[in-house]
Length: 192
Figure 1 (tube, rainbow, N blue to C red):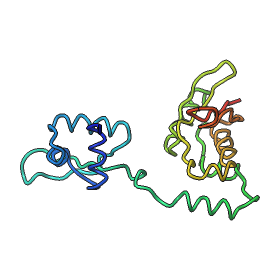
Figure 2: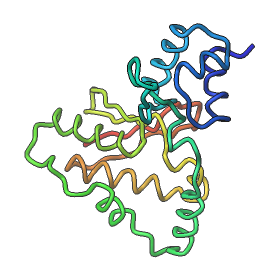
Figure 3: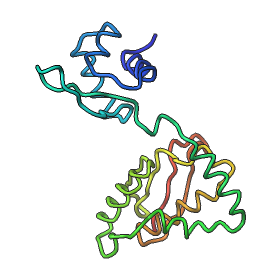
Figure 4: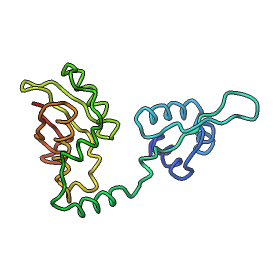
């Protein structure tokens, strides 16, 4: 059986954009139910509120919802794969990591502040990252690999992630497990 949220996602996959009122009418659901599910889907990141539009002179403007732009798909994995193949053995993970990290404002900050700033930066890059304290020091966990489409052909991207964390943290980082290996649900990096 399809859930109400799945029905809403399927509807927006077909129509691209819609208001809560339009979804409610099309799916024959109550407006409060649709608004509740839309709030949950937006907070989960599975939908985004893209704009508002007036309602012919009366009432509040309607919020317009759509699937996130990132879920629409693109050709970036094919492009990245081609570029990495072209780079061949000349691929330098540290150089790319430095570019991805950008100018670091983390130096001189306490470790907890650096961890929080690094996690915020990583999540902007779609890693779904978090950190946790450990007996051997902090660990950073990636709940998602933004390179999943090409990582099997380019495991050197894991070295780039290590270099990226080292650049952001100002300390060495070592990958201790990968998503999918031995049933792991996240990539784990120990920060030295």
